[in-house]
Structure formats: structure tokens, C-alpha cells
Picture (tube, helix red, strand yellow):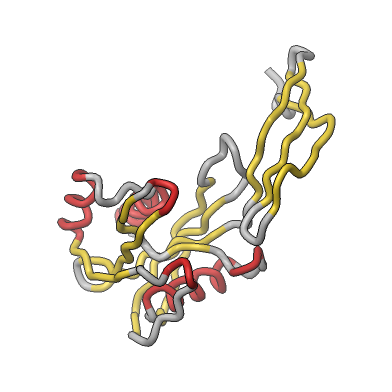
Length: 183
């Protein structure tokens, strides 16, 4: 089996574009020579921040329109208007924007692809410590956001009961656990 690409792009067209994403449709050729289409969502990489303090985390809860309900997650996102920044800049921006906290230390603990079957977008995961409270500066879409402190035991309970369903949050917790085990 070859290490080269299993699918080759023959043509590409933008189907839709807005301030947050581009949706592209590619005409492709597979290894066996058959052709087809592949739909992709292009978004800038984002950051997930685990604001840890004592035996828990500062988390945010908000209504998520695509799933029609409120859920808890770690602060996360990208810079407005598809701007690019260093992963640390994005993490610091999101932490302050959503929670008001500033972190004395941001430790990178991993990188993940968020939905590699339909997008190349990835997320940089950071552990934030030495938290200093301040005022948040939420975007209009985040005006119903709440924040709260969740112990590790509560975090696990919220995952089990389905109050935390965000894959990036659960994956960030896994990376945090692996990071702590390696120390």
C-alpha cells in the first residue's frame, strides 16, 4: 500500500462562504481510478483552553443552535473574521473573551483534528493556570453564555449524564489526564 494520497483532487469550487467558514466541493479521483465528489468545510484552527484551579475547572455553558440545547464546555474558539494568530494568541483571546480570566501560564498539551472526515480544522489544547479574574468580552452569539466552576468529579458526572457533549472538551480532558500522568 502506498503512503501517497488515496484521493487526488481534480477540480475544486467554493459552494458557500461567510465570515466563519468556506464550504468547498472537490471533484476527486480514488486509487482505483473511480471519480466522485468530496465536500469539505474549511475553517481556521481553534484553541480549547482548560482553565484549571484547585480540583476543578472554570467552564462555560451556552445554547448551541445546531443541537438545539444548552451544554457545558471548556472555553474555545478562533479569532473573529477568520483572522489567524499563533495558537497561544488564540487561546488567550478565547479565555479572556468567554470567561474574563487571564492566565499567568498557558501550557500546550496537545493538538487534535476536530472532524477530519469533513474538515482539515484542528484545535490546539492548552492548560491555563495562575488565573486572574477580569471582565469577559463575549461576542453577540455568546450573550447567553454562563460560566461556572466544576470539580473533576462533577465534570465526569456531566459527561456521563450528557450535559457535556462537546467532543473537543472531552478530548481536551483526555489530553490533560495524559499530560498529568506524564509529569
